[in-house]
Length: 95
Image (cartoon, rainbow, N blue to C red; front, side, top):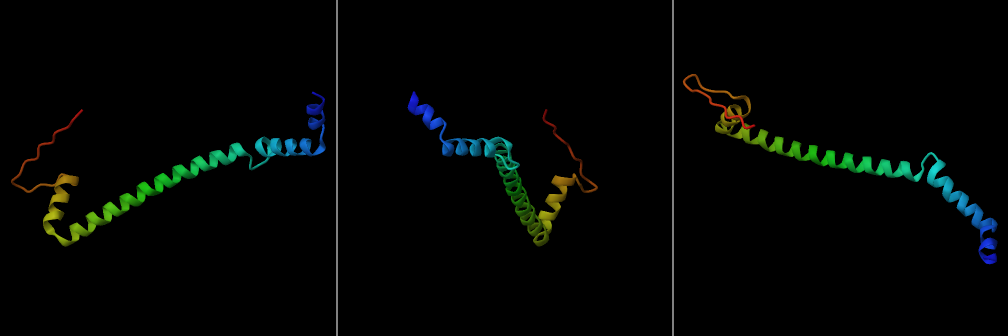
């Protein structure tokens, strides 16, 4: 008991404990703030990967459309519901 009390009164222990408490809770760049920033960074990285994949997919579609007129017609029919004059379009909507 006396030994533990002596350790708790040690100036090096007190200064280290004070430093750790200060860094953990009161500093502008405390650990809580750093963990929030890290989670936000991970979220932004996931969004960036998603958008890079979308750009790659759209670029491939664009190149395919430019090279083949049949793909252009198919794309117009699927995405914009375009049709020829003598055709009817039936939409099936799933709920």
